[in-house]
Amino acid sequence: MVLESILNPIKAEDSPWNLFFYGMVFTSIAIPMSYWIFETHASLVMVFLTVFAALPLMYKTLKYEEKQDLVSNDEISLLRQHSKALASFMFFFIGMTLSFSVWYILLPESITQSIFNVQTHTILNINNNISGHSLQQVKLFGRIFFNNVKVLTFCLLFSFLYGSGAIFILTWNASVIGTAIGNFVRSNLASIANVVGWPKVGMYLHIISLGLLKYTLHGIPEILAYFIGGMAGGIISVAVIRHDFGTTRFEKIVLDSSDLIVISVALLLIAALIEVYVTPVIF
Image: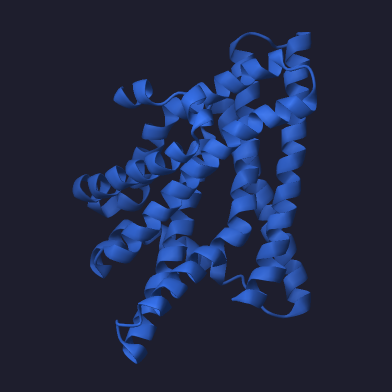
């Protein structure tokens, strides 16, 4: 595969910004191909095609991080090493999300409805749970937090069972967030255009910025938590494949992975607080 010769963990961690552009390229190839070949199922096929392109890098990175677990002697330096891989994955996720948003905004509405059909229904279901009363906010916070913990559990299991399976869940989340941002931007641009006309370029840029900010406030810590959980599960999976199970090396890897899981749960708690109590106040 050509992409395997271009991307490797060391290059990705040295230049994480490159992953931003790879994320945009992968999705920009997957979206038109999925619509062209599997029009009625494009919503899911584009996610799968993006995942297929990202799998080699994800798996190689997990193998590389598992080796670092055995080399590093203290948790601080190990977490610092893992942070390089996480930064690369986050840039990749942001690139995918931005690409999904741009495609949603630029494509004709009839094509958008077909390509982002499943994602749109998912967003509608999420929005139906939003309420404004303080008592309801407490319930909403609990629902969002435990739902995010459920997604984190899926990331752990997918990574443990399939090596780098968490990339599917994360790519799916990128498509949903990208659809939400694209819909927010398109809706507000349409309403403003009817009032002030297209010459007000500054207003349009302001709406685009609001759309990105609305979902990245809680989205960044939430997605970072999923990446951390996926890395934890993947590292354990690689250790089992290497037959390290039952050794002191395996115990060291499990200890490191446990630290990563605790960090990911803490990030999900922060993300839920922002989503329920901060974002509605601003937007």
